[in-house]
Length: 261
Image (cartoon, rainbow, N blue to C red):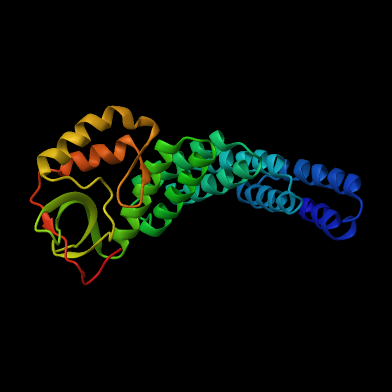
């Protein structure tokens, strides 16, 4: 394994001589390319990429990782392994400032994850959260919101629950009633297990008024709207999801619920 000897020489003997270390790394790549065994080439490319990461040479490491992924595609690697490598390369691209490329890599990784029966909910949630961060850093806030919502759904599902946006009925001290959307968490048997303490939507005097607000606001929500008890920004995909559930039977909001989120 000539590539490993060259890489070790660069790593341990020339840490204070970056020019020589770079030359040794390039020689290690050439030796790795000459390896006849595909699995050995993959190990070599990964080791050299990790070395480049240690020197914060993110773009070069990403390029090498791309070649590693090409080898895995040729060898028909499992969807799980390919997805993990794509997610790793996305991290390198993000570190190099290539946010759009990172987002595309994460989306491909998630596509493979969804098609794989071995993909875990936790892994999918983590990748959706990372996709949300990447999208937000590129000011694609609506796409980030969708990805973050999907991550939340997966984490809830992993806990043995599921959630829906549902209208809740608030009884006020003056005898009037208000209606607002909350995230409501259900057990897999359909029992309410908790809900967000604060309303996500404005509070309205009737379900009809709440539905009308959603229908009128949805066309303007592409760039986000401020609403709810905490004044958070919500986007069109979220409002569209609320609208799909607005006609379901309202749930009573307890003044001191047993469990809130």
